[in-house]
Image (cartoon, rainbow, N blue to C red; front, side, top):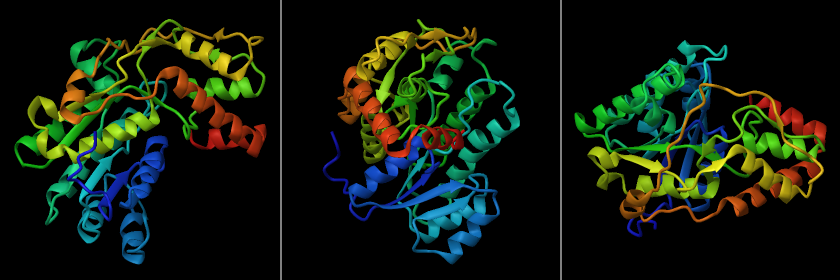
Length: 334
């Protein structure tokens, strides 16, 4: 449940990674509650200071999360009270992606943001979006799971805990798994890829292990958890600083596809198994009892209802834009 003493009306908020799926939805969610949201979008590290000085009243800043001067100026000049740090390189397999870029964004970007927050005259609360990858890798530090993405997230969490314990910054670390729902345009993820295949009348392709169990969380539930973490940041310390946001239910990838086939009304289409990755993350079941006690939060939207809402959103977009424009739009986010 929300903290009734914490009012979002006119609350000054910074969201890094605001151009991504979760960042966009979180921005809309907070604006609807009356918050004054500054959206930090990815840039080349040179434009942030210029844009900040030229447009103090705009809600967008373009810059790099490794640019300490720019981040510090934004937090200080706009008197930011809460930061949601979502900016990240989300490649969780080596697959040709630059390990250097992953560490640069996920680790250096995090401690740069933390330093900018700590050095402000009135330090804001920080909600750091991490990943279940970090938890799995710390428990199973084998070659199969210790990829650059997981390692970068572990390092970011260590930095966040240091800033909290040694320097007194109010930080909450949010570990989550598979967030899905309206607004997700990344066709490398299961739900959007399957929905777009079905709308095109094509057999959906599964690129991972079909029976691999995952915890799927609807976007609205995740946003509520993030907001609650910010509201309760002053109460969360030590081990309680790490919040595990989950539905508490595990579902196989093939079951998700079958549910989408049902909602699409396409029993004539069949899943195609493309390959089996041997280093996929293995999620152990997690029931968020502690999170319910600490935050008053729990998942409210079941998987069937969430997938129905998601598919209807993609179908509406498909009708409005047409297949070709929709596919171009999806490719543009990769």
